[in-house]
Image (tube, rainbow, N blue to C red):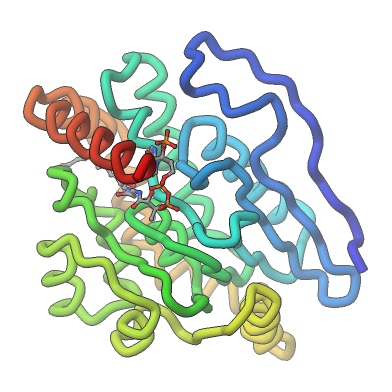
Length: 281
Ligand SMILES: CCCCC/C=C\CCC/C=C/CC(=O)SCCNC(=O)CCNC(=O)[C@H](O)C(C)(C)COP(=O)(O)OP(=O)(O)OC[C@H]1O[C@@H](n2cnc3c(N)ncnc32)[C@H](O)[C@@H]1OP(=O)(O)O
């Protein structure tokens, strides 16, 4: 029932070997023939780390879904245990100056496109979803998660600070006092805790069930005028979107300054080392 499968092979040249995952596109878009809903799947092994290439593909895929006049967008992952490990820390550790700028600018683009998307959006969270993964999920209007995974903004645990717009997405879902405490603690919520606190809307026992529940949410707008719905959503989200749009350059400057602080570099190095040690055990 797929109207189209958009999964082209686009060769890419990059001068930094550690960032080259492969030459293929890192997202696929499948549009259901019957419902008209697009499923956007992230596919960057091993953990869907959000590097410049994955962010670029995400941005292009969101644009494509908007242009196709799809009935809705479901974001998910091809990895059976990880939705997204968040930002690829290698992009921020000992960074190349120009690439770091492009990386952050593209992340800003993705957030503006997803949080501000005209179509109904839902996340089928079929695995762990820390930090940037949580940002993507909370930018959607609805979240369905599989059991026994974790989700949250854990930045303080890495010695970094979630930017204001990460917090905006989080705050659009959680009550302020829960969000504030969780952000300060760098708390990762289990699926059950996320449901209890309203960070996710439903739990599903399989990816198929999660996709079906997301489709059901999107289908709930079938009798609502699409223009009225999208203008309503965009008005509700306008303040946060304009805040970043008006401060993009300063946000980029702050990020570059912050990431290049020796203490931040040291912290990221230790965090990466621990991740690698853990993965070898
Ligand atoms: C005041 C103004 C401030 C302005 C702005 C300033 C600051 C900037 C803010 C930046 C915001 C950042 C948000 C982020 O997203 S940071 C990233 C946070 N992510 C994490 O902490 C997740 C870390 N990863 C994990 O917890 C686990 O890997 C997992 C996702 C739960 C999966 O576990 P598992 O299946 O067991 O896989 P492994 O742990 O073995 O990992 C496999 C492999 O992948 C590497 N890896 C994992 N996550 C990342 C990552 N995020 N980036 C890069 N690499 C990652 C891991 O090291 C393993 O690699 P090797 O196989 O080579 O050992």
